[in-house]
Amino acid sequence: MSKKRNNADTDKRREQQRVFLNRLAALTSATEGRDQSALDDDLRECGIDPAELRKTAHDRLRRVANHNYSTLDKETPAKLRDFLRQMRPPTPEEEQRKEQAQATSKISDLLSSIRSRIASTFGSPVLPRGSLGYSFRNKKKELTQRDRDLLDSHQSEIDAESDDDNRDDH
Amino acid sequence: MPEVGGDVNYEKLVGRLTERACHILGVVRSIASTYVVDGLGKSPVDFALDVLELYLTDKLSFSGDEEALFAFLAEVMGHDILDQLRSSARKTTVKVSSFSGDIQEGEAVTTGLDDFDSELSVDKLVEGELFKARLYALLEHSEPELYEMVYAIFEFNVFTPREIAEIVGTTPSDIQNRKKRLRNFLAKQDYQRSPEGSEI
Image (tube, rainbow over all chains, first blue to last red; front, side, top):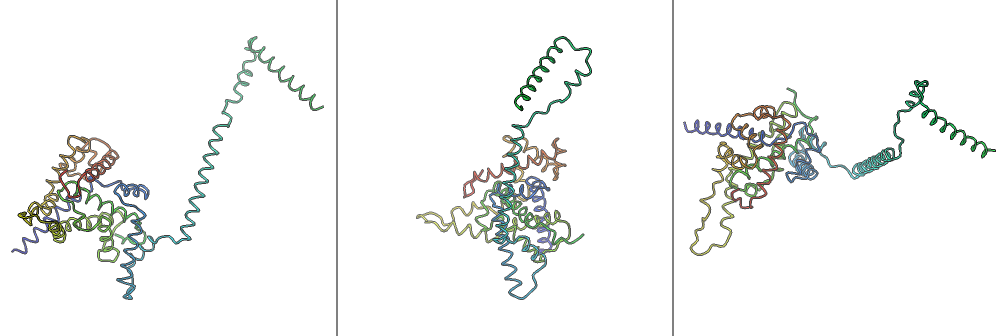
């Protein structure tokens, strides 16, 4: 009788805990599709250093693998092997390669940002080329005296420059 | 259901479990009247790795995708945290610290022990009424948007962002933003508390 009541109490407590945990998850859980960097930011907000966490996790589970399996000549469970393989800290060579790749990427980003700034500063603005010509071409009969004078003055300027160039060449 | 194995992103899983442990302990510390982590001698990372170790060494079996695996391990871990908050080891640790100081003449040795109601607080918290009452009191006047989200969760028993958003009359992404604000709010409440765990 007493055992039955204890079981009922335990079940009731479990159910209360389950509801409590579900509510708490509903109150605080983050978006499911977060990427690793967003998760890292959220961990930092909790006061956890992601790199340190990775190292702590690997060290602890490696000890478990050594102590409970390797030293007893037992086969390490497949999931534990996978975990250790994934979470293994990089070797010095891998670390160096990673740093080099990061440096290359930074330099590449810097160069492309410089290129784009130069292009935006010195690049010629996009003009509606030909629109002037087309408007004159299509309105030949509608040219005013002012338009004709303007065209004549431009033409004479171009001719004069052309004469100067020819003289310089000779 | 396929057994999850080599395709699990363990770095992410460890991070998410640790984050969830931080939230559970953070809420308990913010809402209850005790400062739990010192008494337990365990950090959120320890709780996350405890449950992960059980899974990786085949002491917990599970079949399903990675998201379901996280939900399963988070629930096991949550029960573990709450069970351990009630543990006698923790109560003993707290009692020992009460005896460690100098006792003045005439002062009762057990001063303060009768006031220590950690087990009661955790039980009350889990029952929901204390949890709800403290959150309402914290948020009702200072954070009305967070209050209406908490109200929807407690009074309408809705858990997903979409369900909560429907009750509140907003979008699921706004609910995610509010949750982030709530996490920050609770974290600040926690930081404002003294190490002895005085009331908020």
